[in-house]
Image 1 (cartoon, helix red, strand yellow):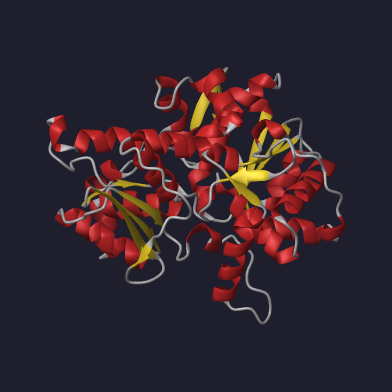
Image 2: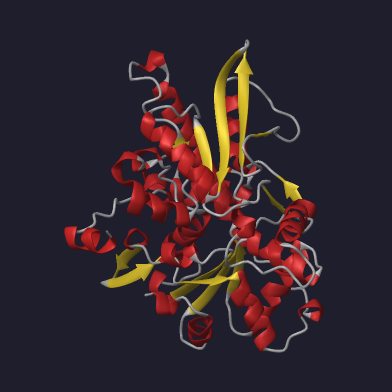
Length: 394
């Protein structure tokens, strides 16, 4: 399956009889913007023009599906949080912490190494990549008058592990006796740059096309919008939502995460009447991750929600992103990406996203509904090693 996850296969598919749709992640967009000295809006418009010039039918933005994932994650957290309260009759804290699920490197590590004791804590919500895959194959294809197997869906991602995520059996389904994959191929940011350079294109001079509004977070004035947070904004969005919905607290301005051991491990607490009622953490990189996992296993984890990413500095620093230019350190590049990432983006509430609202109205029903669970949630599977493989590794 992984041989299909290549730039060469993408080019071949463009020349096939399938409708090719490309979905671009905001992290990839930011990486290309920093590299070319352009705004994110310019990059997305130029990519739309470039992809369509070689035969792509539509170019979307996974910020739209990220809002779906965030809405579902908010709903899931509130449900678990309320069940974990002493008044619910269940053991307090039994369902928590809820751990984010958007990072395939983390999911792979959890399934292979941590097994059944950690998997129940992981959010069942699909990543933005798989959420947009579900939307395109189960809903948008029909709107375009196409069968799901007549659509070839490609994502542009900051991470090589997204290729592994796309080929999980959980993300395939059958239509008319044909196996359909929600995401058919994944290109990294670096592979998109390879495509640009292979065609000897001066990307800065590429015409800026109008954007495909069906699944792109762009308002009537042409401004891109989305949440802050280079790794999806899960902790921040859920924290604000719970503070508002359960505790009637409106939090103005940026959240003040407190740095702990290092900048990749931060926490924030909400106090009500002098008592801490919410405690969230950002946990990036395997070293920090292993410390948190150890505490969960010992029953000593004090967090209600943990936003986990395998890469230090999170998704903006994904392995598929563009590398530092000559004379630039990795740290300087991350700082540049963090600045570019929110520079020309209007910060918005996922619950007010008209695209998300339309998808719920036409397709999913309500957040947390049976249809939402069917299309936007998934399961995890502990990898059981054979005795032979364990002896071999030993």
